[in-house]
Structures are given as structure tokens and as C-alpha cells.
Length: 87
Image (cartoon, rainbow, N blue to C red; front, side, top):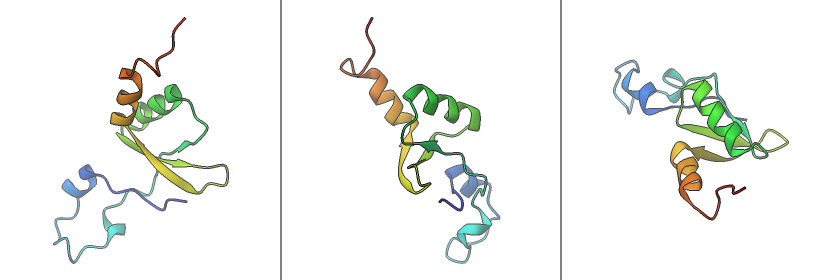
């Protein structure tokens, strides 16, 4: 299970200490938004929007982090005609 996430925003708005002196826990966000490996693309996009993030850790049924999905990943899938839904 993820203990926290560090984004570029966390780094920009961090404490201002030197990078080689600053522990990750000082700038990480402990309130981690995540998705399940079984979630649909629509669910993942909604969770990103809700959390205001561009990357989410992906957890399996046991809660183990098994990957990361990005907004770019979603766009790639949605832009690929082979993966878009047809009626």
C-alpha cells in the first residue's frame, strides 16, 4: 500500500529545503487517491478529475500497488481507434 505520493506540485510548494537534505515524508501527500486494476477507463478518468491529479497508483485486489496510470495513458487509449467503443 502506498504511504504517500510526491507530485511536481508537492516539490514546487515544498519546504524549500535542499533536495539532498529533505526527506520524502516532508513533501509527500499522505492522502493517496488510487484506482483498482479492475476499474474502467471511465472510472479512472473520474477519479483523476475528482482528486485533481494526473497520475494514480493502481492497486490489485490485495491492495498491493501494481502500477501507475496517467492522464496521458488515458488519452492514448481514447485516441486509438482500435480501443474506442463503437455502437
